[in-house]
Image 1 (cartoon, rainbow, N blue to C red):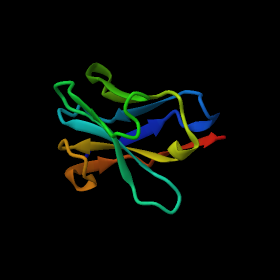
Image 2: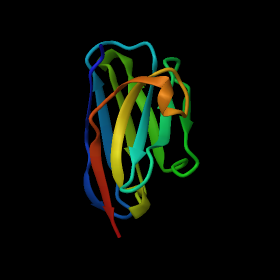
Image 3: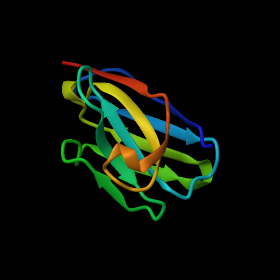
Image 4: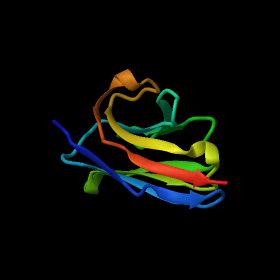
Length: 118
């Protein structure tokens, strides 16, 4: 069992930045990902990073968000720049097999709220 704990969410204005962190309770030689869920919408893929360091970012965030990981600290980050109101939602960290599909991930955090005001 791997516990994932997210932090770093908050309320910001459009154009500002936030950095989300996700700490795993144990070393995981698996892919890590961020998903988000806006009010009234389904959870969607944001970004993923493989153990090798390869990354994948959704088109809606490419060029603005960057996923990274520190394997020594069992931590994955999501640097979010140039935030837009449509980025508002609960952001979830996940660990599992690389995919853009939620079903590929075995472990999930509780989520952290990101709110972007216009």
